[in-house]
Every structure is written in C-alpha cells, then in structure tokens.
Length: 206
Image (cartoon, rainbow, N blue to C red; front, side, top):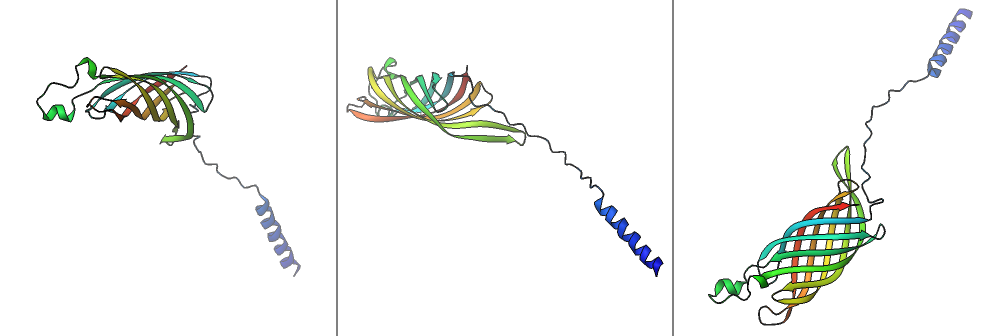
C-alpha cells in the first residue's frame, strides 16, 4: 500500500515539474517592412515640368507642355505660378470647307500663364511591393491668369485636380487634370470655352 502511494506521489511531482518547465517558443523571423517617409518635411519650394494633351474647344486636341514654380505655405496650402503652351489645330469648319484659315500660324499659339492656390488633402499610400510603400496626396487648385490665343489676351480661370506620388522626399510624380475657362470669339460669336487638359510629369522639391 505504501509503495503504491509513494509511486503515485512521485508521478504527481514529476508531472508538476514538467508543467512548470519553461516553454521555449520559436520566434518567427518576420522581416521588417520599411516604409518610405517621403512627405514634405523641410522642402518648401518646388519646380516642375509636365507634358500632356489639351483639348481646345472648337479645335483639335493638341500636345501641351507646361512648367510651374510653387511655394508650400504649410502642409495643407501652397501657391503655384504656372505656364503652359500648345498650338491649336484646325476647326471642324476649316476641315469641311475649302476657305481661308480662321487663324494664322502665330494666332494658333495657345499660351497660358497664371497663379494658383492649392489645398492638399486625402493623403495616402501606394503599396508597390510588400517592402516598398510610397506616400501620395490629392490636391485641388484654383486660380487665374491670362491666355494668349487668336490674337487676344483673355482672362482665364484655372481649376486643377492633382495627384502626387512621392518617389522620395525631393521628387514627386504628378498626374493632373485641368480646365482652362476663357471667353473667345474665334468662330464669330463670343462664348465661354472649357479647354480640358491632362498632363503628367515630375516635380522637384528643395
């Protein structure tokens, strides 16, 4: 009887020692994902160049080149001086009717320069790979300036939606859609025209 009791006691002690033994867990070798912190920090100025296409109302869609210089007031607001140019093609009337051109070659130059104020919002991230994430931001710009076209200088309202992807803290890839609103009399009647523009390019911050 005593032998059975001692045997049972020994088994109980052994079981308790095993349960109290430290458990060694294998730690998963998780690779730390590095996320680039590429939003603006001390770079307040930017300079950029873009290329794209503009649809000049009553004319064809044409190649567009533009540039800008900007200053970031704070993380939300910025101002931007803009310049862009294109050469208008032919109107539908000129294509259908064998008549004298409505504009000379010089008058077909479509040149804009003006000043915008922009607002940054909807910051986000683009996951290129599991190890590389780029910061991005969506912004809206509103401004005004002057357009030289058809021999006239017309006041122009500019509205732009801009999406930027920060490659690093001093280079960003820009994608923008703009509307240049101005009055023209090219076709013989005065009317307000909407000239839609799509561009992409790079901006450099310093």
